[in-house]
Length: 226
Image (tube, rainbow, N blue to C red):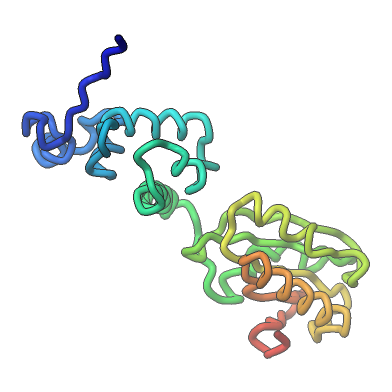
């Protein structure tokens, strides 16, 4: 006959050994990874104690890394959507706090301009994409294409593929006008509207499209083009 392992609830654990009590007494750094997870989720379910569930969660995170999703976590016995969201929210908050000091915030065209500085005087058009997280912090800056900007040369999938990979919440597009005239062309406007529509479908907002030149810039969003 198979012997079932003993299931012990947190309330049945000596108080000094309970994760939350240990955090209060000794600080969070004194807990192991499964114990930290146990402190977040609080309790297990019938036949699955919180310790076992926490170890399964740590194993899942070890395999999936930063790409772990709500769908991955709810596959674990004892974890529903609410607890999965609690865990992901805790991880995201920790990530944001850790990265806050080294990730600049971009909340205006002026904040974005330094990332286009090197293309202002280029004699060929360069298209740059900046990906941002939910706190409007820079994730990455990339050059998407070089050459005249038109609908045949730049496709939403080229722009949003990296944004999806970055798990970005929004993007900013920037490109230069070698002529020095920052007035948007009809192609500039058409491409912008196409990208904005694709972003709405994907849930990754196009915040702005900024045209730069040696002596000025134009924010298409600020000027009401989209």
